[in-house]
Image (cartoon, rainbow, N blue to C red; front, side, top):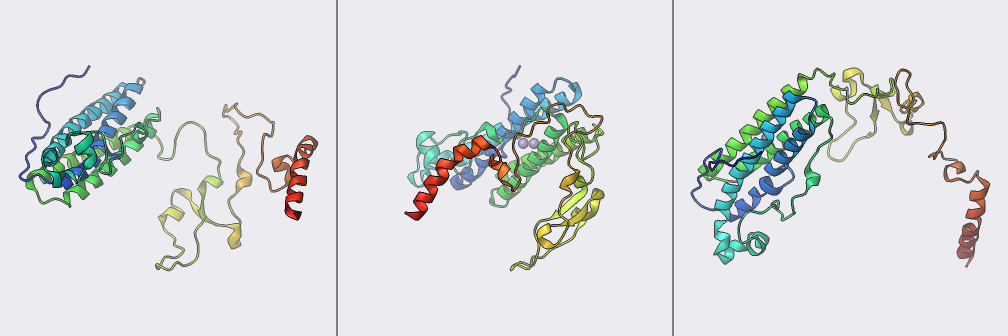
Length: 295
Ligand code: MN
Ligand code: MN
């Protein structure tokens, strides 16, 4: 059950409306990393989360706070966009919002793209969702930071500072919820990755570039058991693809059968040339091609 309280989570005051800035602020109203996306993502994850009542409450708490943020950033945008209603020059800053929306709030981003549920990351796997949420908070934080850098209005800066700060608060809460699951950081789902190849860092970009870039080593090539493997194209041994076996002892996968359905082998059998019926089907096409080439 939702109940609306007629009070903003943060009181918004601005001195001078800035329609162009109001248009930029729409990014946090109807944009990919905006408040509605956050509110819907966490709330719907929460509704799905019936097996973990503690973390369900966390998702509902933060999802609900994001809806309150939507209201706050909405109030800020409405104040900045006010001149759209009456001033022709101002209206040109956002014709879509002015003409179609009457100069008010609507679920568009700063470029007029309509809000879409494809912004939401909802996997139904709690730890995976929590990782998505930490990343979403980081994106929201950096967008607020950039917005702050593009305004001089003190009241606007205060409001954005409040919203930006809360994203870090949420990051902390999601991180704590993830850590307290006590899953190993690289344990996702139930099926185990294949030993050997899982630790191979593939050196897929080599040589020197024109911007001073070159083939580098870092913790990403050597931590967590990783080691560097060179490509066959560079005289290396390539990935240990021979290690891959979809059936691992002790795991009930059960979805694979022995039948080979398709292959990407370089040989003709990949597209069915070893199969007589396929050959028969392909023959007329080959003849037609020959005719075309000789014509
Ligand atoms: Mn927020
Ligand atoms: Mn947040």
